Image (cartoon, rainbow, N blue to C red; front, side, top):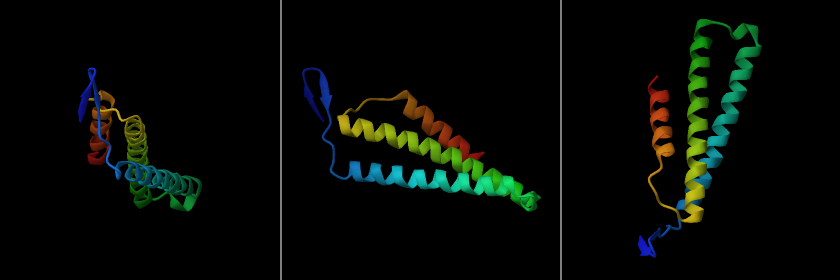
Amino acid sequence: MTLYNNFIVTNIKSWFLPVDILLLIFSVLIIISTILYLVIIILHKTHHTITMILIRNSCLITFIFGMIVFFMTLLSLENDLKQIEYQDTLCCFGAFIDYAANFA
């Protein structure tokens, strides 16, 4: 981290961007697969049992988790590309919602 004219310039490591891109790809795959599972469970009448309701709840939480991870990674990728480092309240709130959704 270097200080130039009251701006903080971050030295971005070379592995930040590939990790962000991989996280984006995997979170999109999670979102697509959970939507597919939820559509199958909702549309087929044979899947309306107690165990499938529990699986549907797990898929819904996984979908919410995937959306939060996707948007947090998108924000992280944007900040890494612009080489911006600051305390972001939206990131802290997203992390709180992420952990709360996982423990629900």
